[in-house]
Amino acid sequence: MRNVAIIGVGITKFGELWDKQLRDLFIDASLEAIKDAKVDLKDIQAIYIGNMSAGEWVEQEHIGPLMADYLGVRGIPSYRVESACASSGIAFKLAYEAVATGLYDLVLVGGVEKMTDVSTEESTHHLASAADREYEAFFGVTFPSLYALMARRHMYEYGTTREQLALVAVKNHRNGSLNPKAHFRNVINIDTVLNSPIVADPLRLFDCSPISDGASAIVIASEDIARKYSDTPIYIIGSGFATDTIALHDRSDITFLWATAEAAKKAYKMADIEPNDIDVAEVHDCFTIAEIMAYEALGFAERGEGGKLIEEGVTELDGKIPVNPSGGLKAKGHPVGATGTAQIVELTLQLRGEAGKRQVQGAEIGLAHNMGGSGSSAVVHILSRVRR
Amino acid sequence: MSSPRSPRIWQLKDIRYRLLGVECNKCNKRFLGKRLVCPSCGSRDLKIVELSRTGKIYSYTVVHTPPRGRENYGPYIIAIIELDDGARATGEVVDVDPSEVEIGMKVEMVFRRIGEEDRAGIIYYGYKFRPIL
Image (cartoon, rainbow over all chains, first blue to last red; front, top):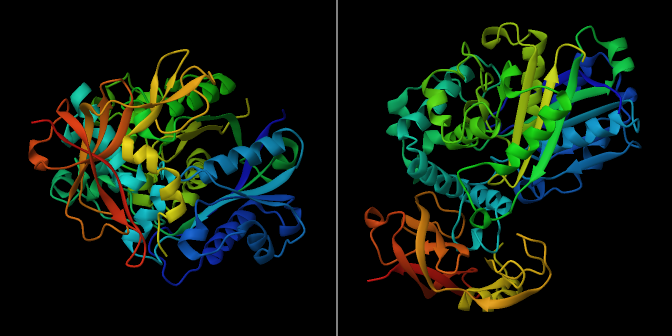
């Protein structure tokens, strides 16, 4: 395996982008990434696209060739990768592996989702296909309800409080207010969360990431090529992917994100680092409880102590391990297929020192954690400013 | 567009009507639904069994934002039930006010209408749970 680095990133505004089509979003992000990398379109040897369900949301499948065509690079392989909300995190892993093993030298990887052309009920139905359709969704399970089941049990077993959940949203909105690409840029307080409508008790509207449109894209290359094009290549030093049961009820302990812990273990081992070496992290806060559970599974907190970590301010922008400086899924937005590579775009900006007002000072090592469904797939990447 | 579709309803009707699962002849664990391989020990020596129809609530939520097809339902309770034989199932809890539900509450399986495909489609049925009086 050879070293691989990120040399260009691009991301669209996230939000309700009614004037943009699926293909517009992906092409916008891709062209931005290619410009940032200072490469030509003809240098791209393959494309990897994370997308959960363009077929359901905009009745368009076969988006591999579609995007290659609209990028003007038809002829090259263009893969579409699906793993629900982890689609582009896993697309990134496949792209990384292809370059690391020498299959390609320079590839474009990204993700896209166009979710707001349909009603919330319709989107809620499509999202439920990331759960077990026959044994969960059939009986009325929605995504917020699965995370609500985890939250209830986490509160029951560890005494995690409603206020601790709210603090995650407050932090992520504060960070999002500093991110021009974020879906929501409003600063909120605990009462905003506690007084918002119930979605799936105990989770309220402000515990939930929004339904968003958006795309993100990244150019990665083998080390020798990366150094030719970039003065600030960001190295991929750890990569782990693990799977868990599709139905939440088949897990013995729903308060712990086991697949996340397994993916993290692999990534830490590969990077030869420990959780306390992480300077900045983007984690999968699809719901506030998910960020608290991610702290525990990633080793930032002991089991059951995730709520205390947010309370102590450890994960604030100026804390010891800043988490979700971009605003996270909660405030930046969650166009599901675009989220995994959007996290890596943010980390790249952070590690280059180009994150503007939300810059984590002196960040050298970053971690991205992207999950599909109720945690049935989880992928963790570790990036470094310094070659290792 | 409608979902779920009739053939899929038919394929799983026994499981949903009778709360069927599998029991592993090697590790003796039970799981909801049809499987050919034990998710716990990997054995392929499984038999189909009728799961316990009573159990207790392991976790629950009250859904206020329903998916397509349930727009007209009031807030409804979804719970993971730990059945007496150790298997777990997810389903609605009915015949109780949401404010009275709690973790550990004893429930029994009931056979109920789950929904319908659309105006011209089939009505479908399956298990729900209610408190044991």
